[in-house]
Length: 276
Figure (cartoon, rainbow, N blue to C red):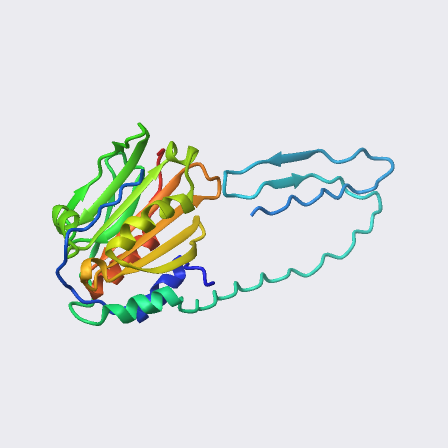
């Protein structure tokens, strides 16, 4: 099974072809390196005590580093220094294979409509904790947090050309990003998807689930198409950071060809920058 990555998202877009279309009422879902420290090689110098060692721990994503001060060897002749070794060039990431679900998604959509958005803007939720880029045309934005029916607080931002139109039909594209520490106490990236498979499968064709890893978050992606009897597609991502401190759900409704571009931009840029 192929893992969908941020760098691979642009290649996936080449297979997507979408058409704008009308539809029935849409169900709306709410989100209920280390580098192993090298062992200090303390020189064996009988007359001298071991060198003092200082260890500094870096942030969450950085590897701990160890700095050591070593006294000079008693011999007057220093060993010749080794010539510097040039760092190896980073290997180019392999082009991801097209997933079956994404291939089917593109085939079922067909081609039509504008192929690109003119520009993108960065938006955040009302607290500034969630950030992502959306088409500048998607001016209907709601960044209010909310509390679910279990009393858990969720941080949320959504954007669309018409949020009410998105809620009522399959005709309007939109993106929703929701994150919560409180929900992470009882749910994970898989249960976030499982609870929506049934409801969305009643209105859409379920094309399957793919693993996701963008370097910051890992999870799973569910792909639906033919929603409400239209070519409209719906993508749902459930993800967590390495610490698993919170859960994230990203939802994108894809109505026309250029909405694939908006989907890719959302997946490439969404990030949790504050406390959720």
